[in-house]
Image 1: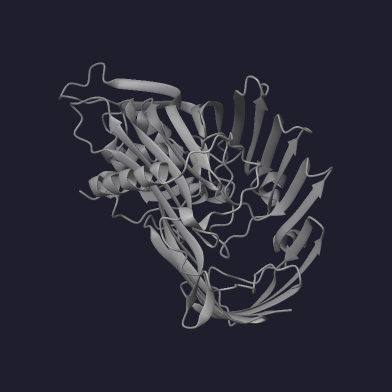
Image 2: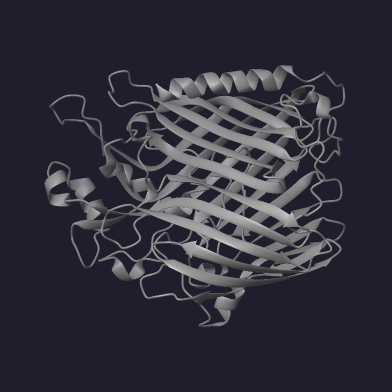
Amino acid sequence: MIFNFFKYIIFFYSFNFLFTYEINDTLYTENENYNHNTKANLIPNYNENVSFKNEYLGKTQRFFINYQLSYLNSLHTSIVFSPMYIYKKNRFKINIDYLFNTDTTTQIKNDWDNFMSLIEKIEFMNVSLFKDRLNFNIGQLRNISFGHGYLVSNYGNNFNYPTKRDVGFNANIKNKNNSIALNFFGSSIKDLSNNGGLIGAHLSVLISNSLPIKFGIGYISDLNQFISNENILSSLSKRQISGIEFDIEFPILDRIDLIGEFSTLKFPETRYYQRTDDSQFTNDKKSRDGSWGMLFPAIKYSKKNNKIQIGLNYNSSIHTPHFFNELYDFEKVRYREYDIMQNETLFSSESEILENYQTISDSLIILLPKDLYSMINGYENIYQTYGISLSSFYEFNSNTNLSLDYSNFIYLDESSQNSPFHSFSIKFNGKLSLFFFDSNFNLYLNKDFLNQKEFSNNEESTMFGANIEFLISKNFSIFYDLKNTFYDNNYDGIVDNNKLINIGVKLKY
């Protein structure tokens, strides 16, 4: 099976990672500055003779112009002016774009209606104060995780760009010796102004150097999962879901830490589900007001900029690990065609819940939040699950890196006929010499918490793509982007492949 193959690959990758390094007596800290040792590479540095002087955000370049041809359900061209300002560690960049030959059917439109439309064109604004003890950022968010990622994992707010643009904020505050750190973020300034959006905060505390135990606590809440869909719900216009996590980290050996995380989700309504092991329905109905899961015991091995994290996980029934992840904005609401009266005849409690999410225009189309979707997809984890989680980041050389995340979840109840659940993410970034030109490339694939039988299906739990930029000269490059995201873009209950293709040229001054 494909997942058995993945397990062998992960084992081989992990084994090589752990045993190809020399032993060093210096205790690892993430703030240490190390020089990259190319002799430790598993794969030779095939770019050693390439200088790569043309950095996309080099300090001497202050202005960018992109002209591109794009396809997203229809063809259009656009031009983007991107001025950037840098002063010490403070940076600002805004993308002022204009689309040509657009029509009413395209998902990408010119948007200059109000002041918020201008704010949403900010790519980033980074401010660093008090000797880096306060860092504040506005714009696109990437790779936000709490603790060890079992509740909040690599969240980002602009994976659906340019169809939807969100300008969020995040900040981190730490004391002088870095023993206390507070991080908080908001996914969308626009949504927050309308009592919606995703907000979260995480506090970590290191006890002391003599007792180097680090504790963390995090809170996250989607204030309104239906912030973009209030006009098509028949009865419910607002729904909030929240989560809390506790994490711990303690060094046990040189470069090896013992880690763990416990996370919970609080549902806005009592959730009912069935364990129908036979034809009798007596005592089969179960209910929960929330769910929980944990990653423990787990270890993290770190050296230089490379790390690997592996551990066991255990989850209550109907719990979804890594709930707020890279794909959350696609998964948080799903449109499906579902006949409640026909499918929930014997389950009145489930029927009452689902009826709250029927749309105004069609009673057979329902709008389901992420935590309720398993009620209708036939793969609900109605028993406790256990498994293994792995996360790793590896630098092949100073220009190329690979990150891999994999989780496996198996039912504790042996009588269940359902196959295991999986989550899988891989990213490969780097620079290489291609067609006699220096080039930047990025490849990625995400599949989130789905049943093994669904692995080949492309739903909201899937995203993949690639981009490459050919650096023709110091001030001129050609780029190609391909991104596949999946969601229902026309509210007909059918998942669409929203394929975005960008081909263009970039001038830098």
